Image 1 (cartoon, rainbow, N blue to C red):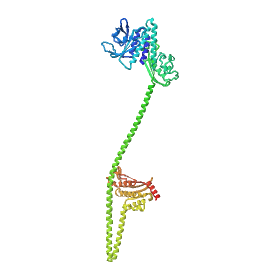
Image 2: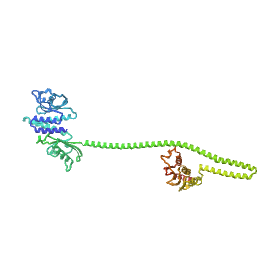
Image 3: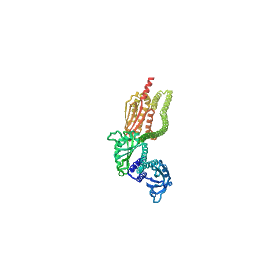
Length: 583
């Protein structure tokens, strides 16, 4: 459409500046080829008496065609155009081969358009246009030829005989009217401006845009036509128009796009000079053609698409973040489950080791008790039996003095047996727990231990009363302290040991610290199954766990060892009080 508007502008200037019809046809041919570089244009003149036509003007045609007369029947499309001068004919069947010495004209398959130049009496001239076929430009080619032939018709009549003056003017008026109707049907605002940038032609799209009427727009500047009541000295449309018109002084065309705040439209404004060179038409009124296109719908769709794309990108980014977080959680869960599985396998091995150790310990304990009963109780009871039998014999012999002495010795042996029985019983179940309580039993244990290991100083810091320790924990606490002290005696090579016992935040805590040689403790104690020197520590941990507590061991070479034992007693105390109230 832009090239059609430019064609009108150029043909107007060319027809105004040329005197002869031949010059007009040459200018029209050059203008068409200039707008469509791959096309060729031929103007034919008919000799009705001879039945021939010849090429009198054109652009990009073979030299052999110029002024050459051919029979009208040899060019059937031209003959049909003369027969139907009110129509523009089209044919796509021409195929042209290159020839030696020929001008550079398009070859191959060509689309041919032909139309007679209207004449009030009978058409004499016809315009032939051929170019490579293009589906996008087919209608534009046809419209261009139609406009060219009608404008040439008016120019031909104006230079013709005066007798046909009225008919010529009528043809010009008809051609002008047809062009105005065509231009008025366009959705874009199309028109011409003069050198003072005032509108001299405009189509009725102006009225459909609610910018006033056509008559009111004439002789007004283009900015005033598009902005009827604009008083803004910094109007963006006015500045853009001024820049485009300034560029038009040096360029063939200029264009810009703007979001017009006044009309709330996205406008594309295109300007093109009406003459190829203003010096060729110094008196021409038309300086430039303009096309104002409303692309609001297109830009709105583009903005909506941009918004949708942005929303989609944000959604994709959000979803990607969610998937990344989920994937990270899954990896964490897999790692956690792997750790749990390893812990389960370690626990399984631990349970197997504990089961074996429990059976071995149980058998060893039974063997020890049996050995103690045999070596101590058994032998002592055997000696007592023998002494009593001997005393019985002495009594029968009336050797009373010897019998009494033997019985006294036997009584002392029985007393020692009772002491041995209490010792064995103490190892199985400390009676001091039942007699004194847990805190007092720990103090008693520490004194007895120091009586045995006199070279190791022991300090006690027990800030707990007997009644504060639940009975269910008594044995576990006693045995744990006993095992810890035995470990110090066997392995620590210590000079001092401290035993402390407190209640902190509802938990009974027991600490056994020594200043011995210590050891390197790496990893969890429960996994060191094969180290004999740590089996005592494992026993402490197991005993604490059975009572719902925990055991932590810290040690380093040369820095001694600390065993920290802890049991929660808040729930146990509450259960004990509830049981006391029920009873």
